[in-house]
Amino acid sequence: MMKTMCTILIVAMLAMSTVPHGEAIGCGDVVSYLSPCIPYLTGKGPIGSCCGGVKGLNSAAKTTPDRKTVCGCLKTVSGSYSVDLGKAAGLPGQCGVSIPYKISPSTDCSTVQ
Image 1 (cartoon, helix red, strand yellow):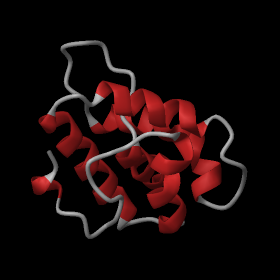
Image 2 (tube, one colour; image 1 turned 45 degrees about the vertical axis):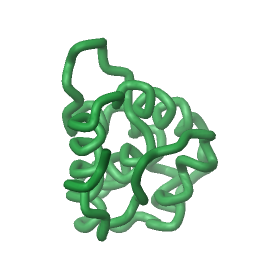
Image 3 (cartoon, one colour; image 1 turned 180 degrees about the vertical axis):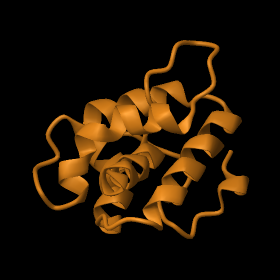
Image 4 (cartoon, helix red, strand yellow; image 1 turned 90 degrees about the vertical axis):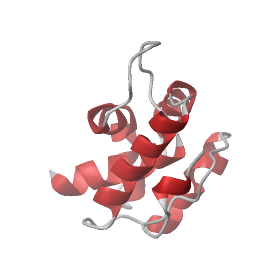
């Protein structure tokens, strides 16, 4: 269960979920929208529908606080579980989105704009 959450959170760093306008993004949102990425990030399946969640999360994280939250959620779980960090870091590019930070356990989320 925690391995799955870690994978989802790493993917979330790349994107941002579909949260209604005016609501802050939380780690639960990140996990929810990035859950289709788990098989890919754990080496158990193709990228599949992962990009839909990545693009949705990216669209939802419009503010600096939202982007910092997503970064922090991903960082928290990425250090605790076994996911392919290279695949996680490459998700934004594979899904055609641009994010203002590198997806990595060493990213300083306080500097995310």
